[in-house]
Amino acid sequence: MKLLESLYNLDNINDAADGYIIGIEDLSINFKNYPLSELKEISLLCQKNNKELFVSLNKNMHNQDLAYLKEALLLIDTLDIKGVLYYDVAVVNLHNTLKLKTPLVWAQEHFTTNYQTMDFWYQYGAKYSFVSAELTLDEVLTINSKTKANLIVPIFGYLPMFASKRNLVKNYLKTFKIKDDSTLNYMEKEGKIYPVIDNKDGVVVYSSHILNGLREMLILKEAGVSYVYLNTFLIDDMREIIKLYQDANKTNALSFEKCIDEMLEGNTDKGFLYKETVYKVK
Image (cartoon, one colour):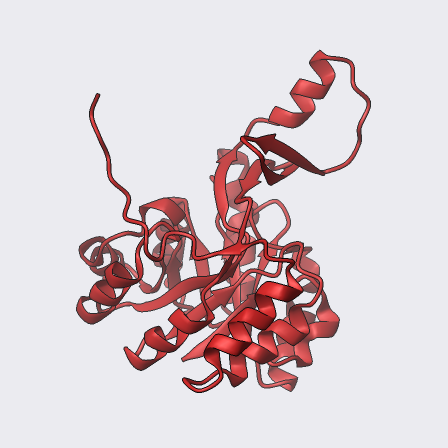
């Protein structure tokens, strides 16, 4: 099993991670976005350091995005890119129309919850599936045992809960004539603090707590899961944390996990790994 992390700093390319996920400006949300003109250099840096590279093109596409999306896909296909994350089916259509060879990654976040749909997209080039963070550990294990796709399972970091094309924070500030030009804000609700990104791509609201599933990672590894993903967003000690994840084994896992909890001042939890989602009709 390999460890992927979001690449917020190019200086981290020689850290303990096995690979990285990056976004491309104007074509991606929830990741650190880089200009398309820098992609070749980043790909070469990863090759030099023996790291895998995935590229996210996971925003909802509009007609005016299609020419740029095509340009990005054609460039990616000339580079050593392991896979392309997508949300919008336009990526799949272009990928297959252009007969590109770079595998796709089905990454529709809250929808990647069952092996049958994963296998449906597999036949259209999605050799990987980025698993929904709302699944329990048992559900992930079941899916992994049944799907043809290689799974990428989020196991650490703030989790994206909600995204909107609308600039909800900026509209609020404008309505109440509050001056604030920052792209990072925080929302308090019921005693919990949620990071909120508001930029030209819209709004993303993240979980209040940081998922820390180090011990669960070992269970996933034993089950043959291909990748786990560590989100480095707003995490300062990521080099040390990724090293602890990489060096974890059955003997030290509990102490390593507690060490990370302390580094993050106790603002950690297990997300949905042991919490089933139940829909009730009122």
